[in-house]
Image (tube, rainbow over all chains, first blue to last red; front, side, top):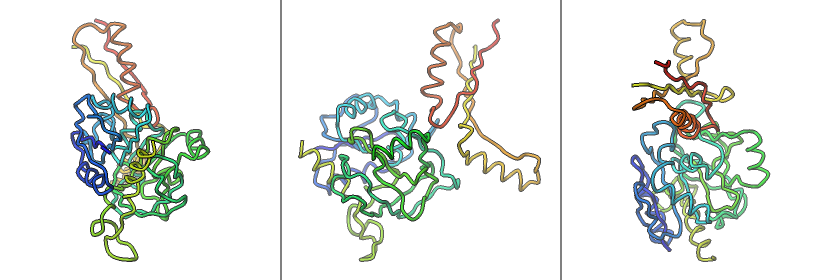
Length: 231
Length: 84
């Protein structure tokens, strides 16, 4: 099982994403934005960071990178694609996911260990969760406010396409507390919080059991591996 | 060189945190006559050669598809230079 992680100029978290994939039991494959080649991977992660310095709009320039032609084609043929933070912004800019992300309503960059509720366990990246599981993974963004038209929000809710919802605190003004969504097919998922930073004891969020022991993010990656093995 | 100007604004119904921060600064300076500030973008596209219908069509497409994101922004103006 080979999962590609695409590095764009200004990506920050591609190494953490590769590490998460390795810990989950698959082989990470480093991909470069300037190529038209996915190197035969089985799934894709678009990592967090500040591609192109967030110039124009967060994720906008990356969404028209050479490799995005292949990403869009692979996503449309069912390949599991996960966009984390800046990767989520790219997926909306590439129209693989609806809505958009705007500057946090309070105007500040925020970093916190964030509680989320899992509301869809049928996507390629969430099958390993139980419905309504409450998880904690790190969040860190300046432009994480999810917005969409009222009609689009109603459609997302009606079709069960809200995968992760903020619990307790809405950290960025996202409409309806939406933290992550999926496409109609369930193979493409984007979320603002960072599951790749909560995959190994000693390096994750604090839990009631022990400091930094949280590994809730790992399930996104093991879910994708299971989804691919089931095909 | 002819220059085409494209202006993009955040959608009126959306919060503009940058504008809000500037409005707050103005209020602190005592400039209380300004009740609201919104920040948009101005793009200047320089063209090598004449502005043909093809160029105009391209500009409109680029303005809609790349320079703005219709989910969060509106293209409020595209201004072409005066014909020489």
